[in-house]
Length: 136
Image 1 (tube, rainbow, N blue to C red):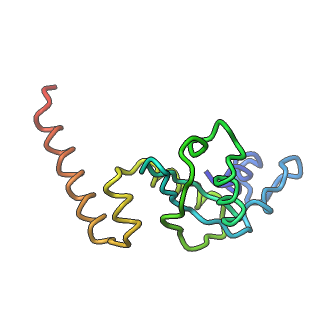
Image 2 (cartoon, rainbow, N blue to C red):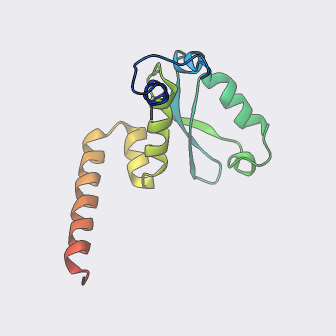
Image 3 (cartoon, rainbow, N blue to C red):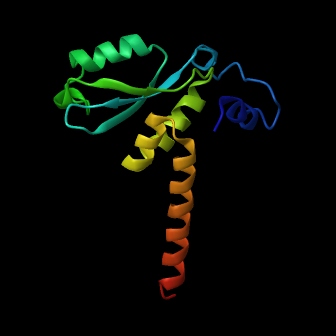
């Protein structure tokens, strides 16, 4: 849900921001990047950031001992998106990719968008077959 939509709801549907709602403009106007790291154990980590160099350094240094990549270092950048100007777009894309299968992530890393399309078609077909077979 976008910030402007929330502001409109709080203002009774009026399309302006309430002064009582803090501005999120500083988070929405920076360039954000979605990225995939390949970890030393061969697994993938997907994240988003407004400073890719700093974030890669943090992953390499193990700044957060509770993070997924901490025990899987060293990590290497496998893929990075083009910049997006809105945090919520990057977060939405990050969450979408996190839900993808390993095969689909590998196709994205290789830039094989036609393969991603074929995987999606196969997944859809599989879901439809399961629906038909399940008794109601």
